Amino acid sequence: MPKKTIYFGAGWFTDRQNKAYKEAMEALKENPTIDLENSYVPLDNQYKGIRVDEHPEYLHDKVWATATYNNDLNGIKTNDIMLGVYIPDEEDVGLGMELGYALSQGKYVLLVIPDEDYGKPINLMSWGVSDNVIKMSQLKDFNFNKPRFDFYEGAVY
Image (cartoon, rainbow, N blue to C red; front, side):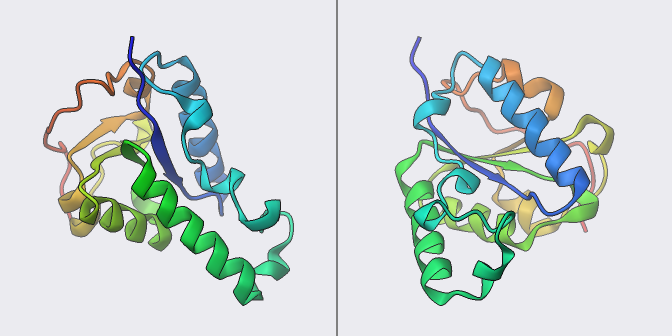
């Protein structure tokens, strides 16, 4: 079975974001249509391997920031699909930028929302750039070889 690569967009700044991040990664490991090994996960590809969750002082380093930003853009351009882990009550502005950039590059954009948050209102712009919005529990079985458009069942704000 063919496999697709993804750009894994997800916040990791709060406990809820970290929980959703881990749940999504576990689901992707089980998904037979994803080539996770060759996909781009920003937290695993920060410049010179310096993770700002462990070394926040690098958030003030222009070389680190510029290189990490450009690597992330390359990750979006060179992977098949943009996947965004989205928490309606904790929107991450960086994810919003990544979603818009992916759309500009002609990428299929999939938002994944934790089941307990699915149906809550989401940002109009995040909704607008998304080709589909699914529950976290659907991620392990989502067929990335046959991406389709569908409407989000919740409202927008």
